[in-house]
Length: 62
Image (cartoon, rainbow, N blue to C red; front, side, top):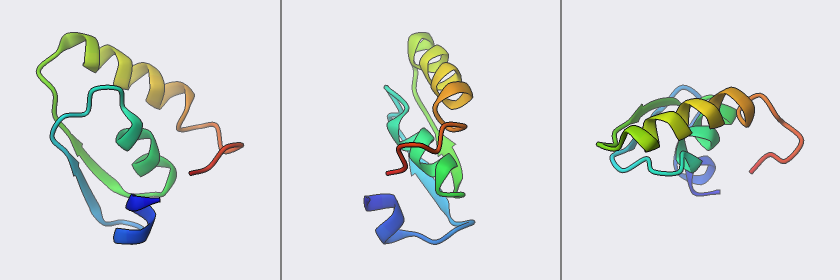
């Protein structure tokens, strides 16, 4: 809800600690541009996996 309430389609969202990728998925679903940063390789793998699976699933939009 925070991303939807504070930005418009096409706006840029910055997530400097992307961790579990919730902001990444929400931004993708809400058609926002995204910059995500994390130092963990595990976070990178999780972001890649969640964006592949969850961003395409529109049955539970935020």
